[in-house]
Length: 250
Ligand SMILES: O=C(O)c1cc(=O)[nH]c(=O)n1[C@@H]1O[C@H](COP(=O)(O)O)[C@@H](O)[C@H]1O
Image (tube, rainbow, N blue to C red; front, side, top):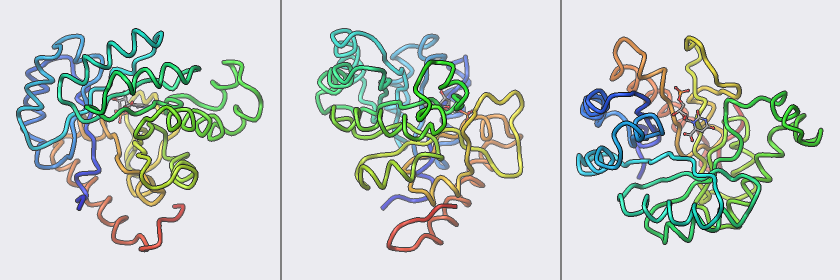
């Protein structure tokens, strides 16, 4: 049975492995998973990934967002799978064969998530990139299209924003995992924010998100532990309020 903190993925978006280790130590009781992204991986490599996996009581998500020709993605994902992490990412991109290659490379040893449309991308960005009007006017349609590719390829789920998560769950069912970044507390902003499609922790849970990726609101708080606990409290409130028949839009 998942507890509130198990829904929280904390990204170790820091440049220094010592800072990352100290955050892991401080937050291990308050979040369910640590995410290592490009910044830390480029600096510290697989050794830090192995350290966090060994450190124990939280899962590890290696977020390298692979995007290349299928043969290259397959070989890279096979290396990721060797590290013993729980989640890894590949961009949904334009080709189903790249997603299939990622799943093949994973070989059932790591859960592959397809990244649909980044939460920093707005409808205007989608229009500028040349997508058809029905996609730029409703980013959700593009997210659903990419999620369908991910499911067809055998991904365990997708990364999407809280604006699309309910449609993902309705369309692809409860087992298809929805990981939702772009999480912001209702009462506090983040300086220089680059996220475009954001929701609160309670909204994400009510709409069906399985996991919330929440970085700066915890990392930059005066007391990151207290901030993580506040997020867990809000998640618990939303879980308690959810009806047994499913969650509604909030
Ligand atoms: O794959 C991701 O984790 C991801 C996908 C996405 O669409 N948007 C997104 O923000 N992320 C990651 O989620 C985290 C968000 O951090 P904050 O914006 O600080 O909460 C960062 O580590 C991003 O790399």
